[in-house]
Length: 177
Image (cartoon, rainbow, N blue to C red; front, side, top):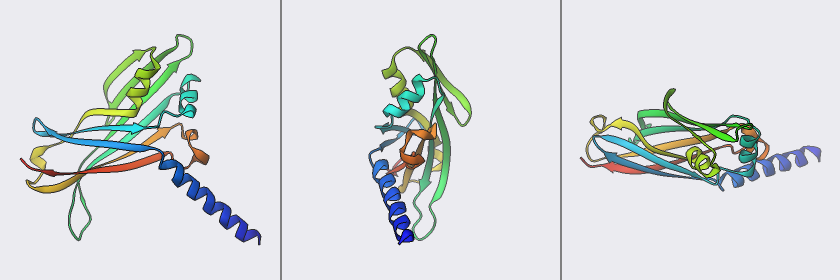
């Protein structure tokens, strides 16, 4: 009897974690511009009250986006053309009440900003814009590709029992030169 209860409780926790992660959505827009594939993405509903509380307490909060460009290969494993890791972080200074924002792409600093506006910090953390993934010279004409992004928020305490702190989505496109 106890094993059955434990099993049903564990199943309920896993199902609740999946239900809660479904509330987050990741909107991806791949673009081909200036001889390269560029990605824009927005993570909606990720700036939760728990994330806001972690930020305002002075805890460094990081949103990590793993971006992959893949080619669809029939009857085989899809081929990864390129990948990037975009890290957006916020270190809130509780004395000056300023957000110190930084953007790293593959470990290189691509931008930084200091602001007092929470809306600017929220937008900075939950969206990536104009990230070049690969040159179009690496793509085959008239082939189907997709951009897959996995987003994760740290500190991990911002989700239900540590579950569902990552969300993954993809967007398909056909490369026509």
